[in-house]
Image (cartoon, rainbow, N blue to C red; front, side, top):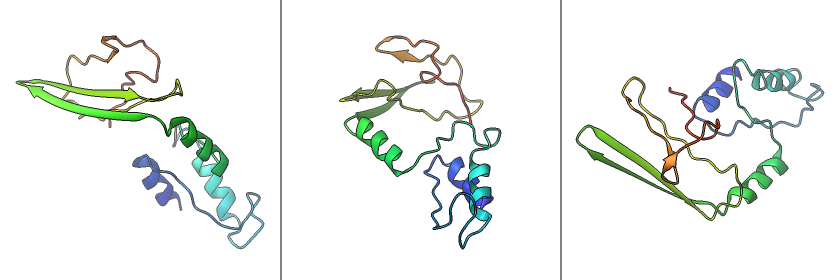
Length: 129
């Protein structure tokens, strides 16, 4: 179970293993469910994991379902430009992510609406994989 959680977490996918067993362990799966829950919620192993139920996911989708994101990429010599345009978004927390090759990026600039982006974590986060 841990390997499966780590795999789905690693690719940024929804992690959902369903059973009829309660979170207390009462049911056919026994202690596997409480272990699954505590393992997923270990913030040292899975930072930024969002614990959610079906209602949370539905409400998230309704807030973000109207957003349309158009991405583009161009190169000019040694310079590369990746752009994303967001339209129709009603949720102020709508974001985009770019995966950058580790060690291959120099002079990174992050712009929002043509100006240097703020230092908010949602804009220009510098996680590299």
